Image (cartoon, rainbow, N blue to C red; front, side, top):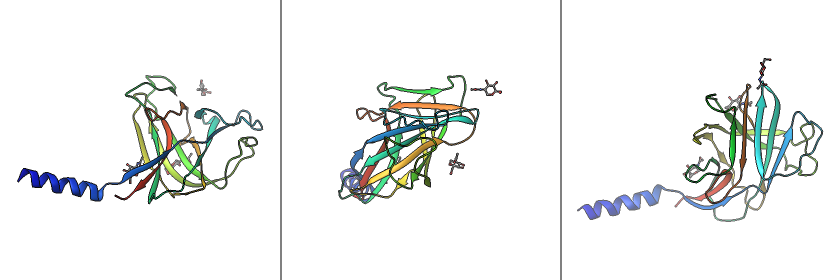
Length: 188
Ligand SMILES: *[C@@H]1O[C@H](CO)[C@@H](O)[C@H](O)[C@H]1NC(C)=O
Ligand SMILES: *[C@@H]1O[C@H](CO)[C@@H](O)[C@H](O)[C@H]1NC(C)=O
Ligand SMILES: *[C@@H]1O[C@H](CO)[C@@H](O)[C@H](O)[C@H]1NC(C)=O
């Protein structure tokens, strides 16, 4: 009796669950700075998003190279590793409670790692996600669904979600997963 119940529970979870088949890390992270509006900062190992008193902003362009595979749905994810420490900073420091909010939107074309600056870069297209980060490493993402751009690049802009003051810097890591990733799922 218990055995049968467990078996049917198992199959229903399988039937309605999605399976992660690929997790992509950014190929390019290109910051652009409002304080150095004509300087191309190139591609970096750390992502940055900042705003100070509503100005002095730093955005990061993110490019993923998406493999062709059997994925049926895709989304962005943002994680802070709390199980094992990974490099990241969130400012202002405690006790400043935040909110620390950034948004992610698609770009109208692929970023250029050699040329893009604050004044010269692809325009922003559609909102994808709003992400709230706290000092304890907790992350809340609203939205996140993206098209599965198989065999293409997927291009995004990470920018402050509201006026005020916040700064987030993170170093991408795969183990444990830390930073922005592009996840590819199949339905079963
Ligand atoms: C924001 O502006 C106020 C008033 O001008 C100033 O006192 C404060 O130090 C500024 N904060 C930051 C983070 O620059
Ligand atoms: C991405 O989609 C999968 C499958 O639909 C879901 O389980 C997961 O929670 C989603 N992740 C985010 C960050 O939305
Ligand atoms: C960020 O996204 C939220 C939710 O869509 C929106 O209300 C807010 O205006 C956006 N912020 C910026 C700076 O575009």
